[in-house]
Image (tube, rainbow, N blue to C red):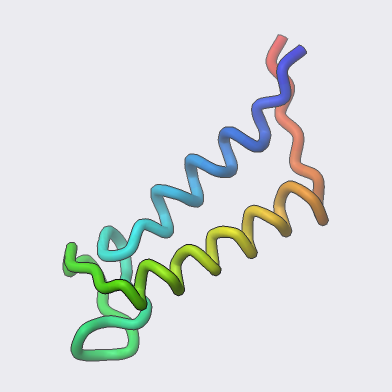
Amino acid sequence: MADWGPVVIAVVLFVLLSPGLLFQLPGRGRVVEFGNMQTSGLSILVHTVIFFGLITIFLIAIGVHIYAA
């Protein structure tokens, strides 16, 4: 049986936390900008830290597992 939990969680978080796709933190003109499709180095760093924090919580602390038959 394959454990698909880490794969699914990583893909979902990657899509949701891509800077500029849904939101960008920090934005170019404001603290948070929505759907502007522009990134900066600082926003990539912030989104990377958020991604690794959330993936650590979901995979290590909570232990999400999805098994495929």
